[in-house]
Length: 163
Image (cartoon, one colour):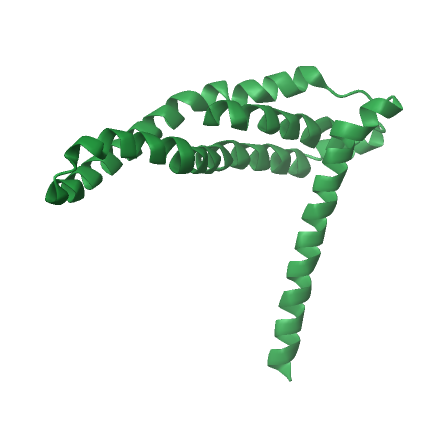
C-alpha cells in the first residue's frame, strides 16, 4: 500500500508541475499577444536587451559547436561513402543534414542550455533576494515584467539563429 501511495504522490506532483508550467506559459502568452490590445504595454526595451543576450551573444559558441559537429559528420560520412565510391556526395549530404535536421536541433539545445539556465538563475536569484515579492508589492506582474520579454526574445532569436 505504501508503494502505491508513493507512486500516486509522484504522479500527482508531476502533474502539478506540468500544470504550473502550462499556467506560466499561458500567462506569458497572454501578456505577449493579448494584453497589449487591452492597454497593458509590452516592455520592448527589456525584450531587445534579452534578445541581445539570447541571440547575439550565443552566436560565437553556436557557430563553433555547429562547425565541429559538421566536421565530425563529414569525416564519418566520408569514411562510409568511400566504400561505395560516393565520396563526392559528402559535401551535399553534410549541407542538407545540417541545414534541415541538425542545425535547428543544435541551435535549440545550445540556446536552451545557455540562455535557459541563465534565465532560471536570474529568476531564482530574484526569488531568493525577494525582488519578485517587491514587484508584486508594487503591483507589477512578475510574469509581465520578467517572463514576457524573455519569451519574446526567444521567439524572435531562435529562428534567426537557426537560419
